[in-house]
Amino acid sequence: MRIKNYFLFIFPFVLLLLASCDPSSTPKEKYYSSTKSTNLQLENVKSVSIGSAKYDVASCLKKKPKFIEVTEKPPYTTYIYGESTEKYDVEFKIVDNKVSRYDLLSSKYGTEKGIHTGDSKKDVIKAYGENYYEREDTGATIIGYFDKTHKLNIEFSLDDKDKVGGVLVQKINN
Image (cartoon, rainbow, N blue to C red; front, top):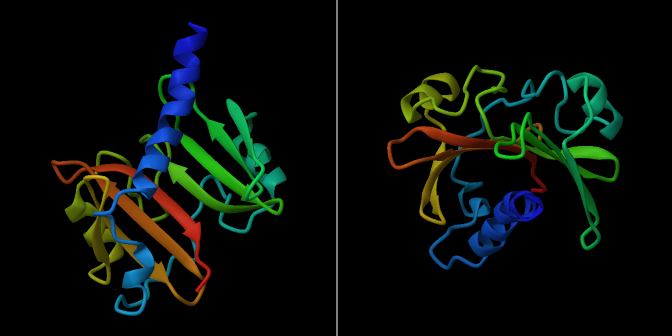
């Protein structure tokens, strides 16, 4: 049981590491100048948004995280929430005591415009508009939007049936 929990916790991070080594993936920054801006200012999870204080996360979600992972270089902390160890709902990356990124991993939480995991690519485009970029990353199709005014990025990972498998919202440094 302990090994299974360890595997379920570490496996997503190994995939992330492998993804960063994928020569076929295109960095999102390549699309920044050619993609028109979309307003993402209202994106949040239970009123926690990019830039919120780390203390707001537990306060607004009304519970403690299932896991807390501390990374030393570069320094950041990840708060991982979920009802079980088999499936996580949302992760928050905390840098300098503020939320710099979050990932929606289940349909429990949705975007400000009502998109959840399991929704279609067409649903995303209907909600967020035509000003998106599309790229491949570790075999998955990603569609994303930039908010150049508020320095935000949202990406929707799509499965082979064009269904949303996950949503990433993060601060951008352009």
